[in-house]
Length: 341
Image (cartoon, rainbow, N blue to C red; front, side, top):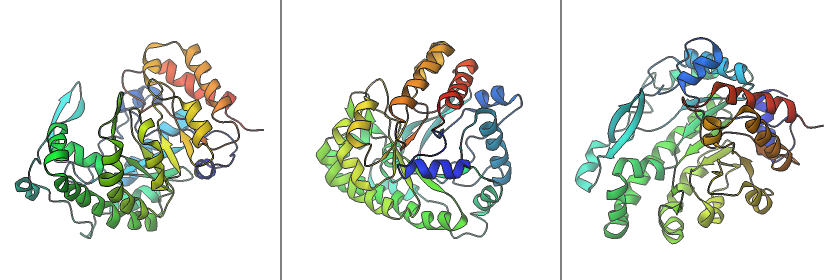
């Protein structure tokens, strides 16, 4: 199978030739070490929504990372801008305090024009160079960008004082996705991967009722616009809202954070409804030994991968502080144990 076929088969909860491997982000520093040359694949979309490098260059560099690891996906960011301060720590850009706290601040949210000539040229170049890899359009359904744009404190106050403001901002982000998603499907992307963090390690950022009554209706409209298979992402403990989350109709959920969620339970309870994407523990990839990573990968494949419907991944992304030997051990173990008979 090609990488594209492998991922799409798993998302249909069927059995591919081997367990696919997908990552949302591979840090540039780590990628450079793995490939033996300078790799720059992140922050390919500037804060104003414009590409900072050509789609062809982005695809070629990401394919090098895939070949070095045996990974199956390449990603193009289709995020509307987040309106928040930004700082840099050791070369990593960190989103800071949100800038939209009241309706008077809404005028600062000026999204790039999707219909502007040339806006999607980078996406078309990316697809023209994707070969047989699974081409992912990374999107947001609204809530993740809203929390970052407002900041957690302002968002928390608004849940009580002005929930309609939250809905208004969410709808602005959802409208961006609703307009953009059909264009990306037409260009030739294979799947959508929606990144909307809504949980802490201790549980969801809001009550299940707020999620169900206020957040989900907007998310649903955006999800319905995604004509391609959809994976949704949230870190943290999603257990209290997992049933509601799955009403979006997504084909996959990521990453089932292993220190706060039990992937075996998720597979047993929901594996007949959705593909499980996860969850080799990031902390282990930093601090443990290659043999530990090999054992963890083998266990995930033999248990969660049994019968198909599983895509292996780190429990968030591959970061600069991970040991190269551990990431290579993950790659080797997937190749050794990941093939279906």
